Amino acid sequence: VARVKAEIAEVFIDKYPDNAKDVAYITQKLVKKIVRRTISVDKIRPDGRQLDEVRPVTCEVGLLARPHGSALFTRGQTQILNVLALAPLREAQTLDGLGAEDTKRYIHHYNFPPYSVGETKPLRSPGRREIGHGALAERALVPVIPSEDEFPYAIRLVSEVLESNGSSSMGSVCASTLSLMDAGVPIKAPVAGVAMGLVKDGEYFTILTDIQGLEDALGDMDFKVAGTDKGITAIQMDIKIDGINKDIFTQALAQAKQGREFIMGKMMECISAPRAELSKYAPKITTINVDPDKISKVIGPGGKMIKKIVEESGAKIDIDDTGRIFIAAVNSESAYKAIDMINGITAEAEVDKVYTGKVTRLMNFGAFVEILPGKEGLVHISQLSTERVEKVEDVVSVGDEIVVKVTEIDNKGRINLSRKAVLTKGLSK
Image (cartoon, rainbow, N blue to C red; front, side, top):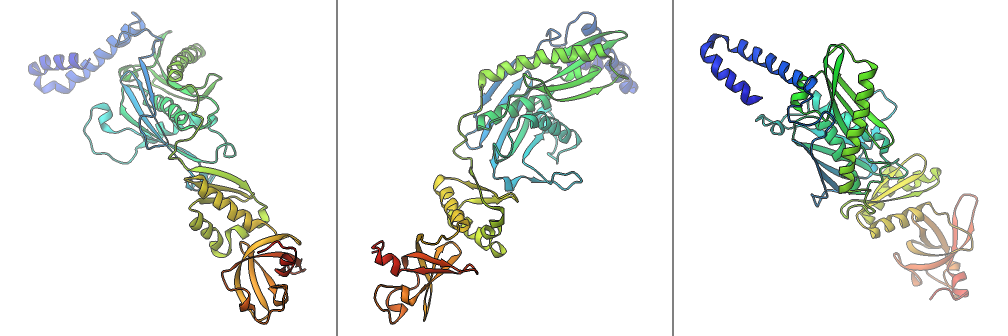
């Protein structure tokens, strides 16, 4: 089409140099009329496909090693690279709006650089079109994203349009699905999308499956449909006519289902289910539950205790109001250390139970020993040894680890300890 336009312009602009705009306008009108008539009467599309035929589809996953998930989806001359990153819930997007939600843990960003359509322009911030396409692709996958309880991660997907000739938003839906499964995210079902077109001539109409750019520009409708094998998850319709009737809508949905099924089949040939394990580079998140009344103890005054846990374990900690604690760590050792510290903070000292503690302070009347994180008890000087003790310093020093037994917890929560009771039973060296 571009070549025909150029040849027409070359012939007529030389003859009518003062009417270049008119020549371009008439040429465009003529091309539109011919293309529409060829589709509606001859049932021939500009690229020679059948009316319900999808362009060739290829899929690839795991092509980038470092991201937590990646996929390349190609349909005809539309190609999308999708990259996925997982993070602790604390890195979910903060929303500043009037809605009930103040955070969003599943995020999809869509980038449409000028080079994807052969243009040379500066890269600028996302425009209305990019924001809208990204929102559509995001909504298409929301119904299949696992709940926070099932998968306590923040999920960010970025779709980079590498080339575009129609329906890059639906390509982003397909690429996102592949990337999620490559990352091991347990989605409820895979999602595929396709764009449907329409050429209407009076009472007669022709529905096109998987429209390309020319069919979008010269047609009457761009109807995007995304969904699983069970049903539709997102739709968006742009039309250039007054409206469509039930017959058009019904046929468009029927053809869209066939198109989605074809695309889904190609995707399943690439990866049929989410991977069993997350990427080795993804954070490992463990969830534990504590009594909500003890959340303040885990956090500590001014966040002192939780900062200590993070510094000593190397893990990241998120706590919600229900007492759920999410521990994100790069390895199991870091996670286990954080869990042990939290369990120690939330644990309660029990009478007659033996603990190994660290001496924190020495007084004339005895020694204070930390038996649990943040919980100290007093070993009276008379309970330090089976023999008479003249000075506390003769038996223990600050920093020593000793084995003690809880003998009493008074009504003020003060803990009395005995080393003597342990020595008597031969439980300590």
